[in-house]
Length: 93
Image 1 (cartoon, one colour):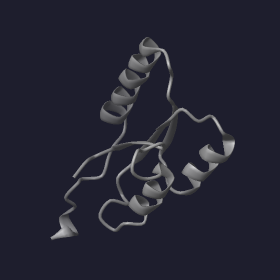
Image 2 (tube, rainbow, N blue to C red):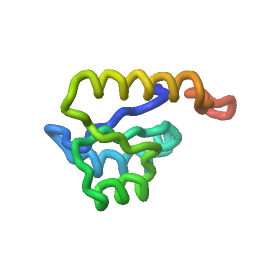
Image 3 (cartoon, helix red, strand yellow):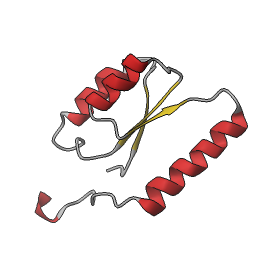
């Protein structure tokens, strides 16, 4: 089980917005934090993602250095600062 999902809204085979809703509605995956990574700054996209359970919404920078720095901060935050649920809670079995 992943501890965190990084989801692009523009997937080749399905819409990321749909996948976000499906994951958050799923009993198994619904507890996993989902960070949206998108090239859209559209307020409607941002609003819809948070409404459907996104934990964060990040803008996909075109500059490689800015993207690398954003990922360093993302990893530091989600691995060092945040307490995540256990992928195997005691009551799961």
